Image (tube, rainbow, N blue to C red):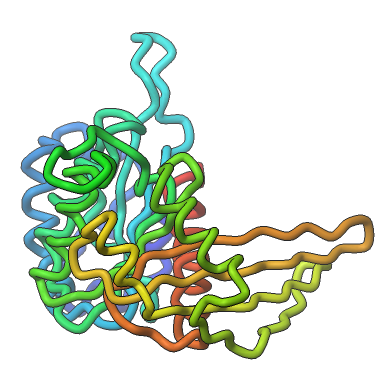
Length: 279
């Protein structure tokens, strides 16, 4: 920040006096030590709310552990953050601290409260979409209250969701996988997308189905309209790996658009990890 102040001195003097020149490293250090973290957080979030009101496109929600946040002296565990990033301008919106990795999902509703989701597609990291306390109000006792409420909250705020499914989520994941593996299923598959970068070739093929009545009869997922999967194949000089990711969708996206949304979450996730984990 001190280097930024020096490099942008002429610009800053357009609205600051800076009678003693740009602030130095020690000045910033003293200022930050004097700031009350909670008060600063509240003020900054009000400031960011002006940007959040105009959020558009894909909003990626992801959990991160900031680098060097473990306090060895006091034995305090590493910090866990949940952040949202607007995909197109790469704007990180209102990070929220979670007590632990297992509590990230409980921080997401608080984060969503700060955002205007009308017309957006919210993507949620698979680690956040993990199984939690089962809700007796749903079939099979599986669909969890917290995660189901999260889906409902996104829809209630005028947005759509793309929620990742993992194997540890049990029945819904297994049901979706079996459906896509069945040759008789009613599905639509997009033309594979092939990209080469960082010494590898990646092929992504997206498949979507809106035939989800059977799934809703069993799980009653809030706002569910479609299911999707993305098959990824990565080829390098030494090996070829494949993986399949499954998703729950509240909007009947085309396979091409579903592929783009899944890809955009990965891009936003990488940027959030880079920003929060850099020294």
